[in-house]
Image 1 (cartoon, rainbow, N blue to C red):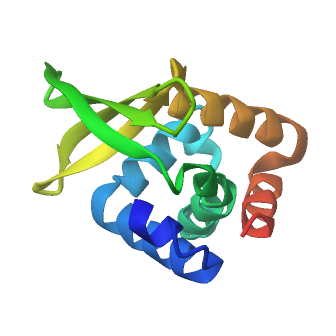
Image 2 (cartoon, rainbow, N blue to C red; image 1 turned 180 degrees about the vertical axis):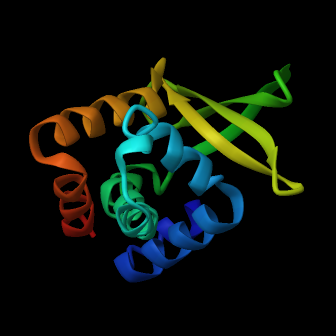
Length: 153
């Protein structure tokens, strides 16, 4: 991904990010966790629309931020068992900046190891994003959440 970021081509970066998401992230499990408080109140059609919106939402939300790391390096610091999977601690180093620590939670999903969560600089992205989704659902309902997700592409 870092090599693709250096091209500066937004379309190529988004396509690569989308490819990495689909191959290496447990999007269904992550999506379910983000709305777990509401999952029993959602219709099958709403759930299908929500699940379809997740990849584009993630790409739209995070891909532009990745450009700041085009010249960064990443190293694996350690890997430790965690539940049925493990946590991989990494450090991302941008030139002239303090390293940023990330903890990638990895578990076996559908026979393959996939990323189920990411904590960056002690901020758990699943918890933070789940809280944001809760607030939107409380104000606008699940359809409002889906509309917001579709708008952020």
